[in-house]
Image (cartoon, rainbow, N blue to C red; front, side, top):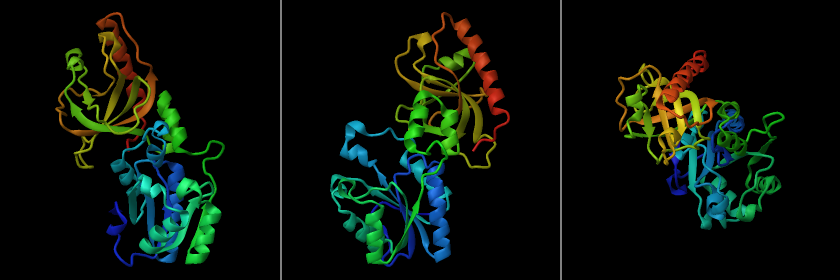
Length: 319
């Protein structure tokens, strides 16, 4: 998949293309349904399938105090977009200057001049251009003027609309299982493994501590069943994906103050993960974080958590 971060990187004369526009945060099932239509239309027309997205999120520029928390960091978002079968993605840096473009200027410079669009696929609530002044009717009028079709898709997801906002709400409460139903896969946090207090190793449960600069939306404190992904390892490596018990919180039993994400690879005490890039995929929240009166009580609960993780993960195939 071609990846561009500026209009100047698009080859002159590129196209014809079928284009869609959106933030695609999470690349959830609703997004993938739209992208599947883009790809289908492109194949029927002998065109390139292209998605245009933004970084940072427009709200982070226009109303920083209301900016949504990011579900997937940009690199993972691009990998997920590539997995849909798109031919190219344009990531536009969203700035105050870009926010001031009229719908007409945006369509002409991006869709028509740069991408040679023969069709544009959008949702029925699409808004674009300065102060969100452009909508589907605007796009249709511009399509008539410039010679491209407009394909409008209705909201998808049945009674519950598949949306990034809904995913954020579910993850924030720790309901990662319901979030996964919308995402079509477990929610992932990723980062570099760093040294922690080494307390888990002392207790017999060595954990991979993610750095504070981790990517992805961190859910509510608690213990989760999930997968530890060693992202630096090849896909065929048997140790690339490991079943894991994941703790999110500040270790209240030991009067901790810093919120952390730690993953214990079940039954593995032989791993040296420091400095590795890892992903933690969360399948199910087992319980909230608790403070225990003694280390013995904590160890007893940890043993139960591990067994519960085993039960949850046994019949699941990791992504």
